[in-house]
Image (cartoon, rainbow, N blue to C red; front, side):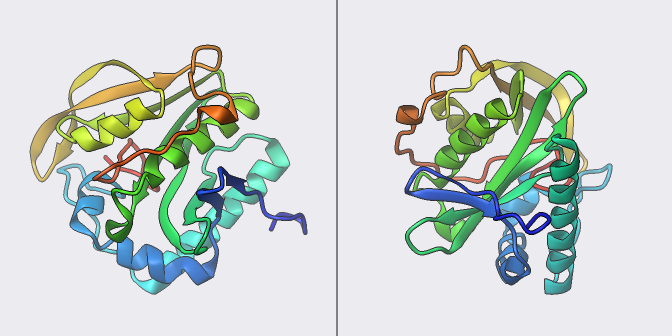
Length: 220
């Protein structure tokens, strides 16, 4: 994947995170046409109107951008913009997406994630969040956080099951189709996070895609 090296994968035996491939473009195009994913994830204009669902060509262009970000990570060691496909380990089929939306100069990582409509309710999101967060701490994150639009209780439940602490609500921080919404803030610290060790991985059940402030893996 990067300068001839094997692709980075993370797995707990049930869920695997791996880099995206152009072969996955069909899945991204179909999944991002889902109304729930368009509501909470992806690009929106200043009034909260979502961008049109991506075409196959759009999804392939996104894969190319992801590959550029992986090369930048290989060169700098900073994983900002690194994006994984969430894959069912047994079938090998993609079920969602998670990635690093930002990595600050102070080593604070923000990430986002979503699950395709056919794969919800199977625990993929919580497992993926645990795998990604563990990796972020391993590569040096001092703090990891995500945001969830208020009212998306299933998404907030994923964050809590993954061991994230609710830290507060940013009032009127987000906008969707002209209406403003509060946004909840969840974070984990490496010395406090209860899922830090592999034995912390546990099955979970989520019913909705999660969201965070990003223009790639998550929302507005």
